[in-house]
Amino acid sequence: MKRLAAVVIVGIAIAAGIFCAEIALRSVPLREKLGESFGRGQLLALVHDRGIYQVDVDRALNEWDYVNEIVRSDWADTERHSMLSRLIANIAAQERGAAERPAKVDREFNLLRAQFRDNTAWAAALHSSGLISLSLWHILKNDLCARQWISKRIASEISVSDDECRKLPRPFRTIFCAGTVARQPSVPRGPA
Image 1 (cartoon, rainbow, N blue to C red):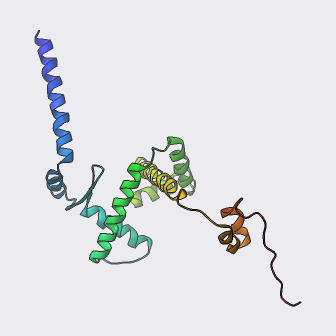
Image 2: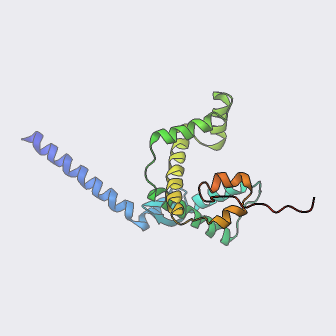
């Protein structure tokens, strides 16, 4: 009897813990306080239960500046707002994209890995980026989900006319306009 009562009490405690965690997850004031106390800064947006904090915007701006070889320590409010909008769009696209199969993610991961001559160079590149293999794999997975959603969304809205295909240089016609242009117009030649 005592054993059954203990199991019931533990079950109730687990259910109550899960319930409280769900409430805490959706509580914006609590997430703001936790973000500030853990050094993440102010909560700027909450997208699909994922918080975007000031630190995330600053990190993304630093990455952007690093890629574009810009050295600075502060950004204009318009740049911050633009990066926040970009982060919100990325998270929304990742959440809406269908889950990619691990084989595709593994393929992308192996393509990245193959660009380095050995394990030492690979490990050094990961370390200098502040990543580990698992976190890079998850970044690739999220990126593939977002790409898949975007390509599905855009592909249905794009239609290329025959005239647009004829304006492209010949090598690009075969790539972008396969089956669109039935015959190529004759090119008028100037005086010989």
